[in-house]
Image (cartoon, rainbow, N blue to C red; front, top):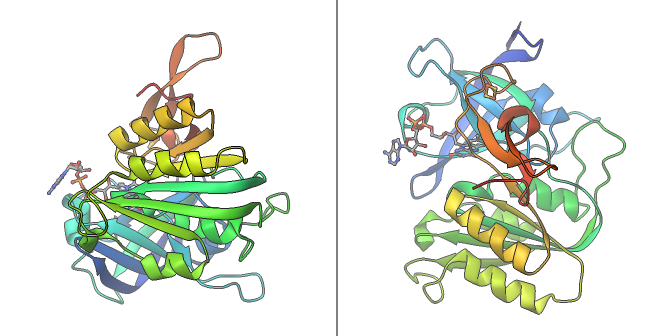
Length: 288
Ligand SMILES: Cc1cc2nc3c(=O)[nH]c(=O)nc-3n(C[C@H](O)[C@H](O)[C@H](O)COP(=O)(O)OP(=O)(O)OC[C@H]3O[C@@H](n4cnc5c(N)ncnc54)[C@H](O)[C@@H]3O)c2cc1C
Ligand code: FES
């Protein structure tokens, strides 16, 4: 493993691909050797990835950290990333095999909050489930992540994952999520599991069911879905955090490719860099 310093002093690691396997229709999971990232990330953070020794694509892609190995003597050794085969990077990525090399830097961005709550309701659409496995494990007190002693685990009494996809074939990692003990509910557009419905239909029912208890929503997925979830959260006066997936180039605050339009306290608006001031924002901040 070679470590170079990038301009922000954040190490760019040339790491070995350990495994790359299909986990659902069009979705793949890769495991890479990255002990520093694995040992220091907290749920919601991401890393940037490039294919070593290739210039196409030249720019890295951001991927949320999905999972890691159990801690041994306070250290971990690998991270897992789940990606949808879509465009220039991911069509090359899914053809890579164990032993090949990737460039990776991170962990980057902020994390989901870790404040006490009765019900943590995670709403995922499409590939949006990726930041939620470690979050569920942390919230339920099964594991702790990162190096900070101030970030506690076990802060949610109950965790719910409401997960929507076009069809049953597109769900990834269901067994891993179930193993945490969370309450899993699925919605498919085509009715291949249950009636045809949107994940927002599940959310509306859940918020009625949990009325009177403390709830926090976290959401990741396509932007129209996150906007709809934010609106439902607002109607029910429930706090909601969204994880934005704006395209990124550097991941470290230099290039301004990743800006999102946010509300200011004085009623005006400004841009914020999703890579360093996000990717997690309060839903009330975002101008969709
Ligand atoms: C913080 C953050 C976390 C992220 N986490 C994840 C994650 O965990 N998993 C994940 O898969 N992605 C994640 N993304 C998105 C990821 O960074 C890339 O945008 C994505 O993998 C596509 O990269 P690409 O090079 O394959 O596509 P590109 O070639 O860069 O394509 C760019 C866009 O063009 C469109 N496009 C291109 N080809 C097609 C096609 N064949 N069909 C439909 N649309 C197309 C898509 O809208 C695509 O996003 C995350 C992004 C951010 C900012
Ligand atoms: S990706 Fe470069 S500033 Fe955010």
